[in-house]
Length: 287
Image (cartoon, rainbow, N blue to C red):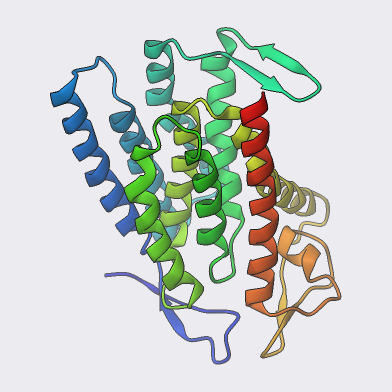
């Protein structure tokens, strides 16, 4: 049912099941539907945060599954998340969401109606794609998003929406770190969409922007390298450690003429993400 792909950074390149992020999509959808029906029975609402988040996760998973099976071109992957922004736009307008953001040193920036039709879709597009691009090592594409979600949940009034999904994702992350499964693009697009949608629903925009800075940095280097040198980021594996001869991604920047084991690279990047997530959480509180 699930395709197997070689683990490029293990001796013998063993075949690993790919695309198991689909189980996260299924579990999260069922979980959010249960939350939705429980909330509706307790206090009926015109719009539902749980239902909106479920719609976004489903689309992210569908998009990732298409990429895993037919290898979508980047021009499609870049703009397809904009479709998932539609339920978020409706939700934000229905609840009268705050259209401003408070940034350190800059103060309050009010985007007005542009928030709904420009800023919000951009958030979804950028977050989903940058989260998808930070991967390639066992645990990297699963541990880092989990850290960001945990940071967003700390002060979110909607933390219950992500409690079950985060715990389930952590189980997948543990299997991914141990090299037993790959969540694939199905998982990375779904979790990226989850981060964007949950941050918007919870009005944690400042926290989100700061938390994903390592992801944005990684994607910026990748895109610049692709346009300037026409080459993709790559590392060499000597049987024990990974090394690179050019800085074309966050991974290759850390391993530039500095051989490191796969686990040490994942740990280093996870700590970087954790630092920015903690910083974002603190700034969200004081802003």
